[in-house]
Image 1 (cartoon, one colour):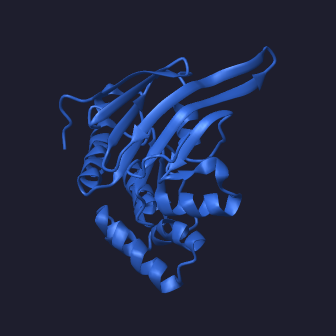
Image 2 (cartoon, rainbow, N blue to C red; image 1 turned 30 degrees about the horizontal axis):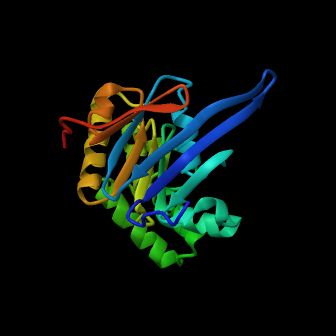
Length: 237
C-alpha cells in the first residue's frame, strides 16, 4: 500500500482480527475497510458478536490486528514502537467508556487532568485545563468533588471532559449512554452533537437506533464485516 491520504483521521485497509479457540481460529473481524474524515460523526452498530467492539478496540490501539493496515492521523500504527504509539494515542484520541472509568478517590478535576499527567504537563497547566474542560461540560462548580457525589449523567460528562483535555482530533465512545436513563442519554448526545459542531470527530458504538440517529453516518457490522455505511437522513443537534 502507498502512503494513505493524510486528510483521513482514521484509515483501515483489509483490517482483520482472529482469536484462537478450541475449535480453531475464529475471525472476529474480516478484512474491514473504512475511512474516517475530520468532522465525521459515525455510529458503529451491529448485534452482539458482530465485530463492532473488536473494531473499536483496534481503533483505540487496545488490541492489535492479525491482518490489514491501520493508519491513525496518517501514521501506520504497526510501524510504531510502544512509546511512539502511546504518544500518538494520547495526542490524537480521547476515550469515553460505558462505565465512566473515573477513579473514586480522586477529585473530578484530578480525574480530568490524568491524560495531561501522561503528556508531561506541569501541575498548573493540568489544573487550569481540567477546570476549563469541566466548565465546558457544565460541571465547573464540582471540580473539587468526588465522583460518588454526582449523578451518573454528570460522571459521564466528567469522562467526556477527560477525553477532551488533550484537545484530541477524535473521540472514541463505547456505548456512552449504556448506563444512563433516556433523558440523561439525550443530554449526553446533545453534548456530543455540540462537540462535533465544533469540529471534533466522533466515532461511537451503540446498539440503540435512537442514539445512532444523532450521528451523521451509520456503519453497521454483521459477522465481522461492514454490511452498510450510509449518511443519516436527519441528524438532530
